[in-house]
Image 1: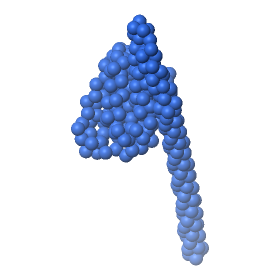
Image 2: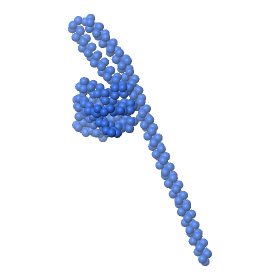
Image 3: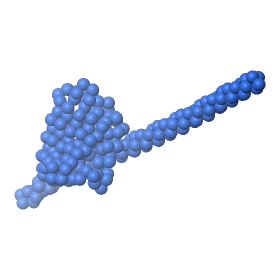
Length: 257
């Protein structure tokens, strides 16, 4: 009888061990399968993120190429035609009487101003020009035009330290600020635009604030593609973009690079 009891104990212990080993294998395979699923999910997410980043970068490169083409077209075609028109007007003014001369002079001034504006637009569209002149100098030119036209009252407060930006980041950063200024002039005409550039040890902060009518940020999707473009461009250079606005209290855009 003792032998039978011993055999039963051995059988039970063996069964428990086998069950433990089987359970261990099942747990191991479940955990391994779960980890594999998580890894696949992470890899899929990384691939999707990489695809979105590459697509966004390609889109921005295409936009910059289009800006360069438009810039050169304005400079080489429209600009040359306006220059030629100015020369013909000068010849006509030499032949015309006093009364006609006054009208031709006004016409020449209009063409000269248009030519100057086209040259300015051509410069701000050309990415290479931005890197040659520099981010802050290009920004000053942009604000000078706004103040000259009387669209808004624009001011710039900046650091005297060199920004030392990567050329590609410099162009994209300028486009973001340019878009923010454009939105302010369109939706907050007659208001004040204040731009502040602050440089910290490892961070650059740019603030574009206006005193316009503002808007409800929950309706940001309805406010046009400009705001989406700014955020998308910021992502491509690893910058953080923040937008805040309240009705009748203006709008503020902050960029942290």
